[in-house]
Length: 239
Image: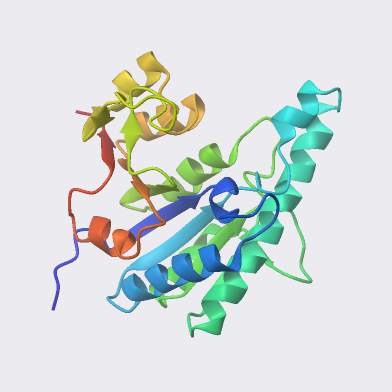
């Protein structure tokens, strides 16, 4: 039996990560890859919750910058996260993983409302819980929702799934001399504005000593690797 370093985790997936090779929407190859990796760790006994973004459909901040009312723009973004949650739920259930989608906005025909005790009970039954709709409030990102939900369900760590293999001092796509960090402190991330998560989410994690691992989800086996404690990606901690 392989030894698990973490038994209850929250996986944060950006909407952009779901694009894959597409310009818009959800790439089935991406959801299939994520689902197979999640299945691998669920079968090891790990309790997995997911917070999903909506940037592949809508970016509220961009719409607001172009003249739309910010509150309206953010609510549209929350609806985008629910579409992504249903897409991921479908991919997981097609390979036999029981899931529940819980939304911060009431949408009873397609999802449960977010109820903390119910979410924890689902996790204890080894169901994957997908949290959608952000926090249910405008002006808060899905990064903040991830930190908040992770604390509410008493997750041991946040896994920030990206297309990059960790945190760099500058954009590794644009700069060949970009330096990757293996480990960082929350304070350093905030001071240097490294955007691991947004500043509100990072501060919330720092205050509650909730570590974050930023890693490349496109590489099969990486979710299992970080759960086993392998040195994958960048670890952000208080010390």
